[in-house]
Length: 146
Ligand code: DQA
Image (cartoon, rainbow, N blue to C red; front, side):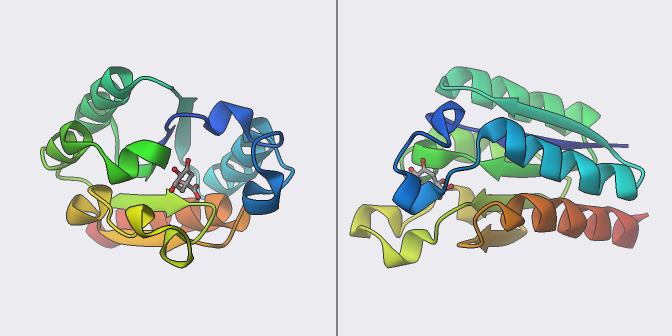
């Protein structure tokens, strides 16, 4: 079974982008952490990043048919995208909303999440550890449904 872990815009620049908020690890580092946890649970991991809203929507559709769970760090689209929300609403699998930072201690415009309206759970503020814990959580939710 496959967990989709999808990353939205600007996360390709992790490590260089606002390191005081997002830390020094790159997206490849986070992928390695997530992959190690998926292997432990005997699950496949589709780990992807896009800067395009439309591509993200298409990947969510792919998770709908091919995924056992979806972990989504929609980055800036979290706070703007009705299209991402509408795509998430078509899913019947667990959805975990993921953020490196804690959006609630940041600017007011980050306090609203369209993703949360369709998320089973939210993991935020734990930095790179969140990429590991979200895979553990998805594995637990998959096992609970089996
Ligand atoms: C983020 C938080 C969002 O508010 C922001 O737009 C991001 C990254 C995070 O992982 O902390 O790009 O999703």
